Image (cartoon, rainbow, N blue to C red):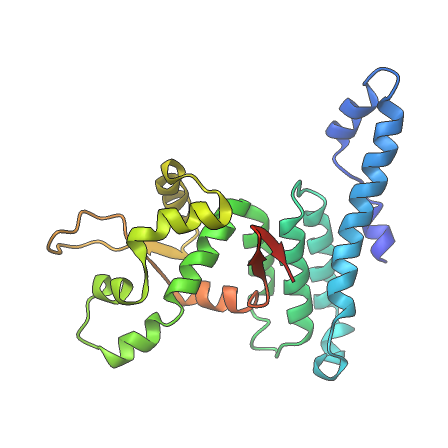
Length: 228
């Protein structure tokens, strides 16, 4: 089934351009097709092979729902230029097989989120999650805190531009654009209201982002590269 899904085709327009290159076009096309397909297959296979058989929901594994998720994910993976997102996809597939029915409720939404966001947006959300994952605990401990107080308590927001640049090479000049664009997903929102010495620009994650990133909690960074 996996081979059939991948054989649905790669980016036809790009392959046409490659083939049209004089003399070397056909050779490049073969190398492109075989290398890209092999890399994607290897990443997805590698993740699935690491499944804990004891955790697998066998009924879900053999369900039409899981088949649909798998096919949809493979089709989306074909559109991706960078391989970082393929790792995200593979984590979501793996976790779907090791989770309960309740935890799988938003599987298709999570796959679509990964597909629609840029890798810089994914990095931005990941960093906000890392810094704010204890926010809800702080809210319970300090019920009188405003949202702005809570974010400042658990987030190094002032140094966020530097952190993002050091980890992911995201330019500070691009950060406001990324935040505004990412806010449209509903996963984060800008804190508004009248606060002393606050002119806006601070964002807070919601519960959906926490759940989404919890599904990707084994994705880590090393030397600016996503690894398992």
